[in-house]
Length: 520
View 1 (cartoon, rainbow, N blue to C red):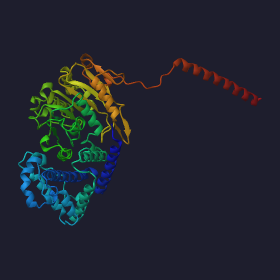
View 2: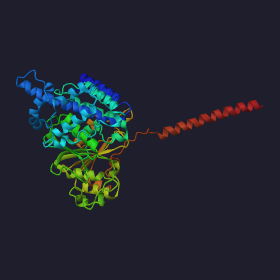
View 3: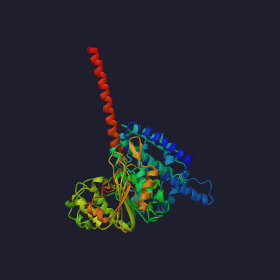
View 4: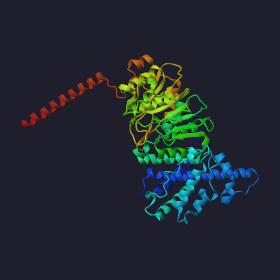
C-alpha cells in the first residue's frame, strides 16, 4: 500500500531540491552543471556517513557527548587506518562538509580548499580495497572552471552557494534509510537534468519506469539473486533498481557494470555510494565493453539488465580477433560495423548464468533487418535463447521519440516457444513524453510470467512459426493489432444513400416548379 503522506512529502522534497539545483546553476547549462550539484551532494553524504559511523560507535561505547566533527585533526589521524579498512575512505574533521561549509564564505581560497579536500578523500583510499571505487571520483568537479565564473572571486561565490544550497537540502539524517533520501534525490535530479537536456543527456539515462519494467521481467519468481550486471551502465540507475525491487540484502554478491563515458562512470560510482552500497559490493569499470570487457573473472551473472546505445559503430570484422572472441564466436558472424546492437546482445548472452535472465532494450531494426543481424537472430532462436520480445510505446526515453523494444533471454527455457507482447498502448502521456504506469508494468509482467495468449496483445509462437518467418522477431509479425476503425453496415448505408437521392430528386422537382412559375 502506498503511503500517500510519505509520497506527498517526497514530492515536496523533490520540488524543493530541484528549485535549489536550478537556481544554483544560473546561466550554466543544466546538463553541464549537474556534476557540481551531484558532486557536492556526494561530498555532503560521505562526510555525514563517516561522522555518523564514528559517533555511533563512540555512543555505543558510552561516550555520549562525542562529536567527530569537533575533534582536532591530529587526534583523528589515529583512527585513519582502521576507518579506511572498514569504510574504504577517511576524511579529517576540518575537511568534513559541515566544517568547510561553515568557513566557506570567509575563505578567499575556497576553490583551493575544495580541490585539496577532494584530493585527500581520493588519496585516503589508495592502497586499500576501495581504491578503484574512489580513484578520480571528483575529476569532473572542476573548481577552476569558467562555467562557475570568470574570476576566482566569482567562482568562489558560486562554490559558497553550492555548499549552502546542498547543505539546505532537507535530506534528513543519513541513518534514516527508510526514505533513502540521498539516493532518491540523486535519481530525481538525474531525471530532471536528462529531461531538460534533450539528446545530450537523455542517452545516458533510463527513466525509472523502464528500469522497473526491465528489472521486474528479469526477476520474475525470484526473491534474491547472486549478482546484477549492466554492460552499458550509464549512471547506474538500472543496476540499483534490482535492490529497490528485491530488497536491501537480496543481491548477495553485488553490482557490476561497465561504462565507456568517464563523466557518466564517475556519476555511476557516486550513485552507488549515495544508495549506501558498500565499496566491497560494487565493481564499476570504465572501458569499451565490446572490445575490452572488464569482468571476465566475475561472470556469469544471474540478472543482466541494460539499455545499450542504439546502432553505434564498432570495430566488428575490422578487428580479426573478435570473430574468435568466445562471446561472439558461437553465432559465426559479427554484428555489422555500423550497428553494434547485436554485439551487446551476444556479449550479454555469453555472460548470462544458466539460471539467469537478461532483459535488454533494443533498437527495433535489429528484429527484422537481414544480413549478419538475421544470422545472429537465427543462432539465438535455433538455440532457444529468446524468451520474449516486447514492443514498447514510442517516446518513453529522453532525447529520442522512437518506439523501442525489449528482448528477454534465458539459457534454460521450459519450452521452445517465443512470446511476443505488443505493449505499444500501455502508457500514459505526461507533458512531451509517454510513461509506463504501475498498472501498465503489472499487465506486461503478468502476461510475461504466465506466457499466455491474449488477443491483440500477446502471442506464443512456436519454433516453426518463427523460423518460417525467416527469423523475423518483430512483434507486429506475430501479434495482430486490433482494428479500431468503425464497422460499417453496407446494406444500411446503401438504403440511406437511396433515401438521400430520392429526397434530392423531390427538391429538384420543387425548384423546377418554382422556376417555371417565375418564368411564366
